[in-house]
Image (cartoon, rainbow, N blue to C red; front, side, top):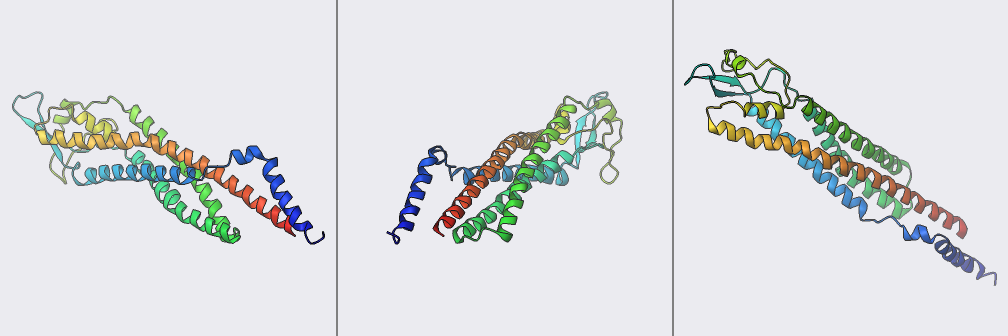
Amino acid sequence: MSNTYPLVGYSNLAINDSQSHPRQNAMAFPRWLLPLSLGLLMLTGIVEMAFISSMVYWLHRFAGGEYTVATPTMAGTTFTLHGKPKHFLLNQGHTSNGAAGTAFVGVGLGGILVLWLRARALRRGEYRGFTKAIYHAWLVLAVLSALLSIAALVYTYLLTYQHWGQTINIVDASLLNNQPYPNQVAYPNQAWTPENWFKAVLKLPLAEKSDRKNIWNHLYIMRAWRWNLIPLVVFGVIFAVVALLDAREKRRFMGSRRAVTKGRV
């Protein structure tokens, strides 16, 4: 009897443990939630970076030129408007790009590596030290990334709607005597976001149809990255919550493993 007692005791322990917590077993954390939410976050992050990079490239490479506009006071004459205003608001783009980059690179690509290290450590029973520290640091980064995305969303939308509906005074613009680079004279009135500025430019009587078409194409991109901040925030918050729930589940798993190990001894 003494030889069989430890085996029977362990079997009863396992059975009693599974039966005494039926609700916990029924509500086990779905394993697919973590990779799915991470994949969606990475997708929205890389889309956001692509949109903003496209806008920035266009602003630096092409939008810094000039547009030919019909003069309102003299029929048949034109004047040139510098492609960017004097007071150009760009920080919201940098903030949003930083939020997207943090989500894709830090949380996404970094998360793939961290989760792989954690899974390997759990299989080997060596979840401690460096692996545990870097995993906890990544969890903090996931939460901070979600908060950064929220801040970028609020900042971008507040700034956009603060300058919503602004128009370019065509008479003032025609009197600027703008010259080709490096003697350009940028429109000095008010401050502008890229989206609001080019929306106002489209209301001017542009002489070149190609300019209007080009602006429209890039205005769509500017609006797209602003709207894409919403799913970036949603998926960022969802993933942060899922990652924390997954961490709690793994902590319970490790606690149960230690309890079983002590029971064996």
